[in-house]
Each structure stands twice: as structure tokens, then as C-alpha cells.
Image (cartoon, rainbow, N blue to C red; front, side):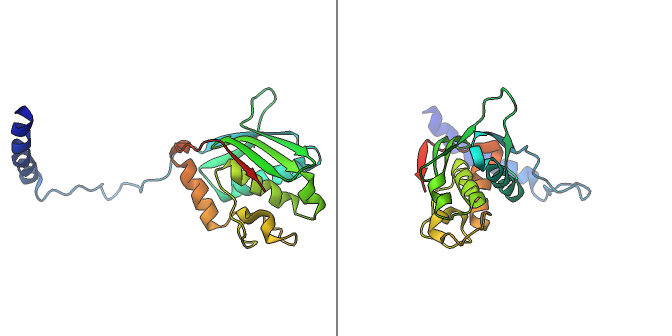
Length: 186
């Protein structure tokens, strides 16, 4: 019974509030500065100590992402710090075992390098998986997540606008999105 009384009284209360505020502007003062994105970027740390001959490519791949997005930044882990991402060189095909958004293990496989694929593109692509992006194969060279399907002549290591937007969205609001564990074999 009490809830039906509340429901009947609600329209009258809304009408009274509207009558009291009618004609009042609800705007910021003209001198107010526009709102800016002030949330700090989420930092994802990586450990490339196991990347062997690919350490430089990993550094360059991280720099590509740092230039391309603002909601997340990739930084080398400091001595003694537990990294979110481990990067290990091996003789297989490049692949990423993600344990969630911004964490996991990248296996920097020599097989793709031996076939002629660009090491910085491989690094950026695998870091893209860590940042939540799936493979998009087959695809053009302009799509970083097209991976090896773009061919060995493709050296583009930069995400396209859609890939950037997806990462920005996933890491928006300090990385509030949660993605479960996934394995990507490129």
C-alpha cells in the first residue's frame, strides 16, 4: 500500500520541482574553462629482459603505442618491480597469452622474423593484444592487428584510428574495463 501512495505522489513532486526551477538556466559561468580529460593514464609495465635480440623492437613497439594513445602508457618495469607483461623470445611463431587487460606474456617468435616479418610491427601487434585488441585477419597493412596476413613487405607498426579508439575506450576511466584471459596465436 505504501508504494502505491508513493507512486501517486511522485508526479505531483516532479511537477512542483519543475515549477520551482522553470526558467532557470543550468549552465556554467561564461568564464569557466571547458572540461578536460584529467584522469591519469594507466601505466602497464613490461619486462623485456627475456626478449633477447628483440629488446630494441620491444622498446620501439611500446613507443609506438605511447605516441598513439593517451589512456594507457607502456613503461619498462624498474629493477625489482613485478611487470604486468613479460616478453620472451622463442623459436616459435609470435603469440600472446593475455591474463587480462594490460597483462600477460608475449612470446616473440623467431619464426616470423625468419620469414621476413618486421620486428617492430610484430612487437606493436603483440602489445596490441595486451591492450585488448584481437587479430583482424585477413586485413590490409594499414591495420596493425591484421598481423602477418598483410605480408612480409608490410612494415606499418602503427595502429589505425579504429584500433586506437578501441584501446582508448578499453582503458578509459583508468582502465575500468575488464577483459578475461585470452591467447592470441599470430
